[in-house]
Image (cartoon, rainbow, N blue to C red; front, side, top):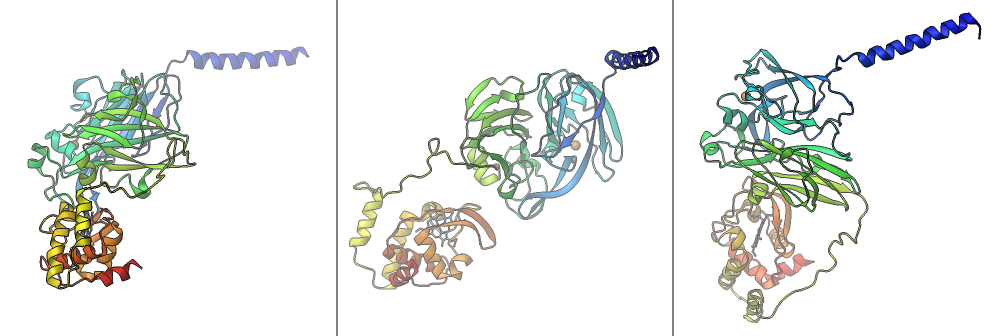
Length: 469
Ligand SMILES: [Cu+2]
């Protein structure tokens, strides 16, 4: 190498070293804006190995949105949704928090992040009237999964109207890698009208005080995680759920029907301190992290196992797992055979009606039909056929029943599932196949049609037999 060339290359090497040296000594942390995601999405795990200065921008908005089918509510929100966005930062980060209150808001709002060590979790420092912004900073000293919520007076009302979300302070070493991560927050709504009452519903303070919500939901509305909005995973994948509870009042007994949590980070701490758990408690203003591997295809049902909340107030979500069956882990139904022990009440009833002389007149049908009704139908449809709101449709003055005799016979022959509308109310439930004799079907329907201002039809055994084909 010629001297001049060598000198040149030496200069280059020196230059390179000095750049590396400069950036290594330069302790100024990187600055980045936090990526926020809307439920059920979770921002990707943080891969950087050093603390950063993280800037968070969050806007409070008051918006009218869907609480359930046909039911609207004026939500007070972080970021325009319930729950607010998922915030992911790293232990040791310096966070600059900017809260903007949209000019169209009617209320002042603020934020109490449970991840903050300091007065009110930031509440006082972030109190912001409509059309203004507030800024404060904190160091994320403690890792963990934390609720954030509005803490403006009256606090309960701001929370009840939807002002909460989750912030995850990732431990320095991160969490074990999984294939899918999802964001779920349970909360309650207290409306002036009963569950399902249509239209724009106002907040009901009385019900909030007595802790009797009309809605208990995941991610801000009934059906936010069902059917085509269900969470998804493939057989063999590992799934992590970041679960929060905004309350404002109820504890959640969080359970996934058809799965077992392999790991639970109880109360949103950073230690997977329990394995093989069925149901974990998520306190109001608290959280939990669960992960599990999905081994077989199925639709897993996410519930609050305080089960009336799930089937009558809305806290039901789905995780659809697709992939290959594994019959050694789960077989599915292998047999379906008749089980009729001697002397059971049902059998007695059946033999009676088989032995009993066939009803000849309409009056006889109604008389026998009443007995069949009281034994087989009244438990669900109630003694006076009035049904149970939202669960069992009425048979009394039922437009659905009266509109179509053939269809009614079909229901008793086969059972009924799927959404139906009876007297303007929607029902989506399961009526089992009751295994009644043709006689009994004719009798019970004749009875029902001749009670409670129904149309007075008579149903014959021949019609039942014809319908069977
Ligand atoms: Cu607020």
